[in-house]
Image 1 (cartoon, rainbow, N blue to C red):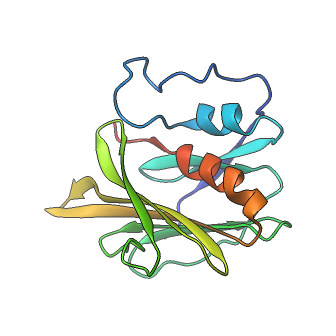
Image 2 (image 1 turned 30 degrees about the vertical axis):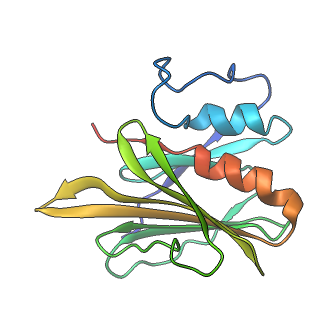
Length: 167
């Protein structure tokens, strides 16, 4: 079952470019990443079961139906598509030909960020253990597909905007 709500957030003038918790540890992430690094974009917040992230305000929820995991998909008029798969079987694109992979740490949840240049370009963050449920880790793959190189900054703002709802 898809569980997501959208909360509108305005981008302009928000954030100071510092770390998410002021500690300087881990990879900078959260809503302020999108708001600070893409200040000319108005953002909406997508809230899923264990995490939230931002997409541009003009993106439309495509409301896909997951079979064995929680999924979501948004698209914009500029050809940018965002898709996430959260569950036991989410997959990484790190093994794709030409993939450039780097480690990330979002508040203690570690994973990889992968960029694949092609048609379309792809940017993915993949976390292989967000939380453990019934002895099985839930994984998160959040992908942004885009054609124009100019949309790389928007893609990075989207994947960098993830926050965890793991209380």
